[in-house]
Length: 161
Ligand SMILES: CC(C)(COP(=O)(O)OP(=O)(O)OC[C@H]1O[C@@H](n2cnc3c(N)ncnc32)[C@H](O)[C@@H]1OP(=O)(O)O)[C@@H](O)C(=O)NCCC(=O)NCCS
Image 1 (spheres, rainbow, N blue to C red):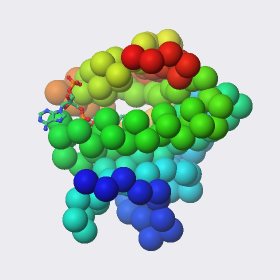
Image 2: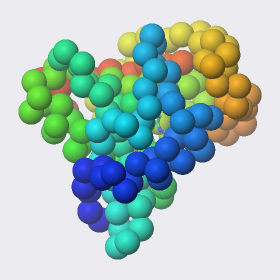
Image 3: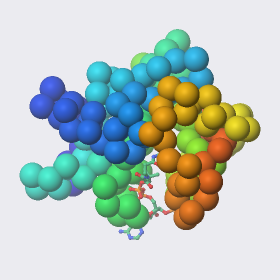
Image 4: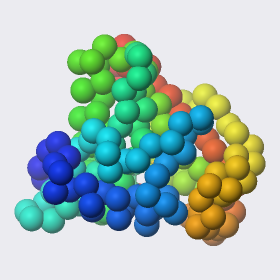
């Protein structure tokens, strides 16, 4: 598998994946709105096929993992992409990496917690506000769980896990 920086050619695909996964081509995180297809990121490829992508945003000493998307789960793609972003963030002097997901996304909860992240904030009912901007976000998510809350995870980057 190859991990490379997002190229301009990849960005249309990133936009399509964002629409598919997040109910719109933008992502709302707290008070900020991100267009993942305009952010820095990495892409995982197997042969000629794109099998994963990650986008991130550096601000002060913090690195936000804006989207992480593995097209073939449980094969190590997400881990490789996360490690790549952590490497960049550390080099840039960041002391924290953080990400937001929803209450139904148990695969992401597992993924983040087993890689050193902890829950740092929960916005109960936060998805009601998000749906005002993104009416296409489904009511029901992974494993048939109603999508209601935003769960924020963070991990200090100056400690090794
Ligand atoms: C969260 C997400 C990115 C994880 O990606 P992933 O590619 O499945 O992650 P990995 O394969 O690296 O790790 C997942 C598990 O698979 C296991 N795994 C890795 N290689 C494996 C293999 N060859 N065979 C079996 N299991 C394997 C890992 O050990 C890991 O298990 P653990 O968490 O118990 O340690 C993925 O579920 C996803 O894309 N979800 C949809 C998008 C999303 O919700 N993103 C998060 C919010 S932005």
